[in-house]
Each structure stands twice: as structure tokens, then as C-alpha cells.
Length: 441
Image 1: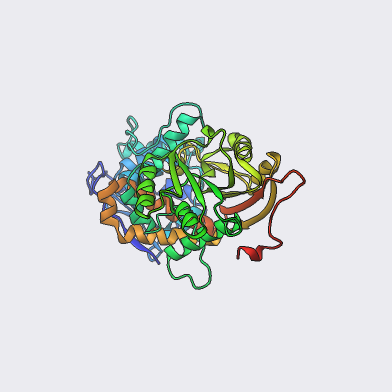
Image 2: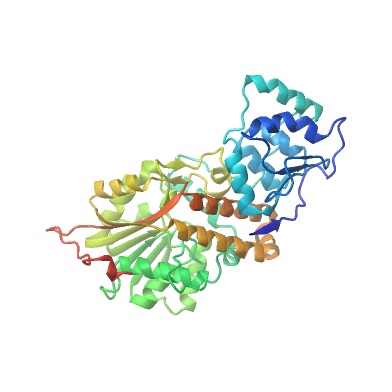
């Protein structure tokens, strides 16, 4: 069980706020009862210390300011809750994963009220003196400009997520500096070992152990960890590309420090700007979520054109059945991955085939990603004060919530992650693929 309580210093209204004639819990009780299908599932403590919900549950939700309710009035649903949480007007304590799971299963996804309840809400808001202009959103919200998934807008979205602090990511990710799903094989004793096992799986699926000196393109190379593994253990010649200036700078420094400058090159470059070069293999690890369904066909066509005959592509990406966009009214879409999209693995495989690839293998690592996220949450909580010093308490809160909620999503199967391995057939259909998976296990 992960027990936590985040220090809060930024609420707009001090605790306790001025008291109304009736307690906040009494005033809000009819509204809260209507929000949950089987009653309030967890303890809520309001700014005047009045309470709703059962004692003895997995944790507590503290509504530290009436501004949290005001945000919900102006942005009913996930966005209003997110804004209150980010600012510290809403705080959680207890078993983080259990609290989020309980609230998710008990409450509706949309908190907008219909006409029968609107008068009730307005009366409560008036009694709590909440009627007024909307509060300014937290500055941590992303507002990328331009056409969705254009080169310039994608660069803004990437920068919002990754260009915050290399030091912060080091605290969360650990020494491996790998921001994608690890693989916990038999005998794995640490997150770093599991990330190394994942890197090795990718390299072997791409056949680097069969092709000394193979030229690898790593699309969305992060801080260069996979590129360094491929060069060190398999003698690959690697080009890594990223849109994050912070990642590119640190990756370049890590490669120089490791003495790999002759084998690995890191570029601040968009995949759409790659033209005449050719590669033996391509990896796309934890980057595809930024491509988008509208650009998916062109993405795979572009990578197909960059590969030599019988070259392999490994696409490693989070997926959801039927696909889903991280919309502007969602917590993830506004604060974590603006313009992000999760695409159904079946649609991904079909798009690969339409681009000319032959799909050869699909593997789910869903449970592995839950373990990875739990490890990242542990790291963040263990290094909380340092993390806050790096990026501020609001952004640290954002990362804690998004990683814990994502872990629950993988646990329950609402989201998954798949590695899809494909090959560009040779002139006579030659794939140069091994006879069985045993070659990379």
C-alpha cells in the first residue's frame, strides 16, 4: 500500500474558510449523493472540517477550499477536478491507488447536471458564496497552438511534457533514464534491470544480434538509453531523434561520457524531416502516442521508405480498444500529454500492412507497465522534496496523479501496451526473420 499526503501551500482560501450558516457538508450533501451511484464511497473532509462519507476506507479526499467547488461549477467533470487538484484546493491522502480506483468505480465520468438538479446546485452555490467569475486556470495547463499534429504544434506538445527538468526525470525514472515500459523477466531485481531487459528484447526482435554494425533509427529516442544499449551490446550504428531539446542535450552528454560518440548520433529532429537516409532497422518506443490517428498512415509510410529491404520496424505503444483521444477536457490532455492519442492495436497493425509492412509479431506488456509505473511512483514519493525543488509542487502533483491513475488503468485492462514487430519484405518476399520467437527470448 502506498500511503501518502502531499504538502499543500498554494490554496487560494485558507483553511478554515469563513463559515456559512450551515456546514459545507450539509449544503453539498444532496449534490454529492447524486454524483455517486451507491452513495458517497469515501471520506470527504471540507474546508470547515465538516465531513461526508464513511470512515475507515482506503483514504480521504480533502476539499481544502471552496474554490474547488467553484472550479467544478465552471468546468463540470474531469477538468474542474484536475484544476482543483493541481492548485492544492483538492487533496488526497491514504492509499493513492485504492483511492483513485474507488472514486473511478463509484462516480460518473461526467459531472454535468441535468435540469432537475440545476436549481439545487445553484442554491448550494449561492449559499456558499460561489457565484462569480471562473478562476484562472493553473499555468501548468497546456495550450498548444496551430493545427493539430502539425510539426510546430507537435513540437510544443513534446516540449510541454519533456522539457521540464532532466533532474526531475532522473529522480522519477532512476539511473536507466528510460521513460517507457520495462520488462520484468525471471530474476529481475530492480527497475534498472527490467529496463535493460526491455532494451535487450527490442534489440533482439530487431535482429541486431544477427547483423553486426546494423544501422538503427530510434524515433523518439528519449535520453538515449536504448541507443546506448544497442551500440554497446550489439555494435549498432544508431541515429536517435527527438523533439525535446532537454532530452537531446542530456542524451548527447551521456553518449559522450560513455565514449559512444563514434557509434551514436542524437538529433533534434522531426521524423517527417528525414528524407534520403536509409536504415537497416527502426525502433519507435513510447513515441507513437504523439503521432495521432490522422497521421498514422503517413507515419508508417515514412518509416517504410526509410528502411532497406528486409528491414524491421518495432512499434512499442500504449493502446486502447477502439482508440481514444486525450481531449482538452481531460486531466491527461490538459496537463500531461496534450494532443496525445491511444490507438487500437488492431488499427495500428492494419496501418502498418497498408503501408507495405508484413506484421510478424504482437506482444502485450500490460502487466509490466503497471509494475513500471508503481516503481516510478515509489521513486517520486521517495524523492518528493527534491522533485518539488526541481519542478514545483504543482507539476510534481500532476506526475504523481497521472502515473498512479495510469497504473490502475493497466491493472484493470482499460489501457494496454503492445509491441508490434513488422518487416519490409524483400523483392521476392524475403523477410530474414527467425523461424521462431526463441531467437529473442
